[in-house]
Image (tube, one colour):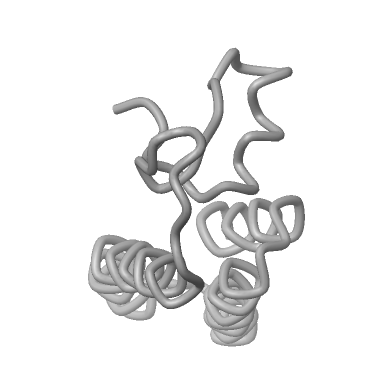
Length: 108
């Protein structure tokens, strides 16, 4: 749905024709910071609930099948750092670093 992403994602509208983003708040409507914080943390937790269980299963299975224990440790560290950074950058409203940390944790 249009407008449900965090406000900083409005930067995407130049690239993807995404439109204004504001957690589905109507233009001109005044919201308090606590509502925006609530919506932001709801999105962060939802993203974690979607991604962390699947990634843990994949990392666990790959641990059984890996050729190099050192490589497996590196993958787990990259994934963990990427997920922690994603949460921090999402909470701090830093779009580019949030996207980069998500990519690191997903593509590792």
